[in-house]
Length: 280
Image 1 (cartoon, rainbow, N blue to C red):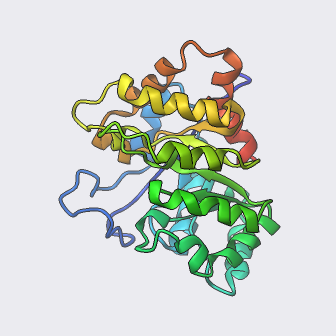
Image 2: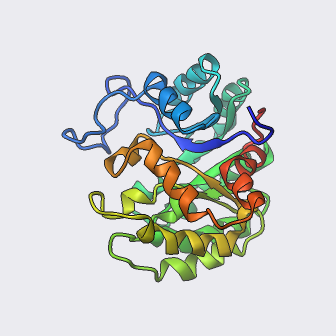
């Protein structure tokens, strides 16, 4: 392995009978089990060394299960789980999860809440303050309507170590840039906020997308965040709706091909290692 291991900062595992994946249509190609045995050969064929598993259901039991998987598979470097950020006793749950060295942070399926301002209107701020106090990370799973609320959160918790997943899911299939771009620019201006170059192909035309559809959005975030706040993620297996694992990796590599080696090193591992405090 090189001195600069390649990290996929965003992938999922699930077993359909284990938890409630009601966000997933029953007839979806995703509605089957996806585990480490399916992912490992894909990582090897794309020369990806490590991954970060990210929650897929709103369940602390899922977080416990993901931590068990991390302990059994050498390629897993960290886990981002779910806790109830509105629970006054959230610290007790975090105490338990933090007993595992693989537990790095928390995510909530914010984009699925009816209120785009859920993050500031629900009482979650107290839970986020607890994450910051413990130096844990938070993944903002946001869509464009959620973006204006991120600066409000960061004003209240300036030391929260946060990352925006999937470049906040702009409407790539429609070629829409605004208001995503203006709102992302405000987010990127906040010190310490990171962004994942992930999930883009599933916002594009699943059947017909090309690197040229993705390129302008990636260039925007590269200009706004800089490589030291950007990290690659596959969003496997969700990405399989629009392309195979290897194609996702190769597309990002192609778009970054003209960048300096240091930029690629950041995006393909260095940033994730720093942000999630990965022991790799």
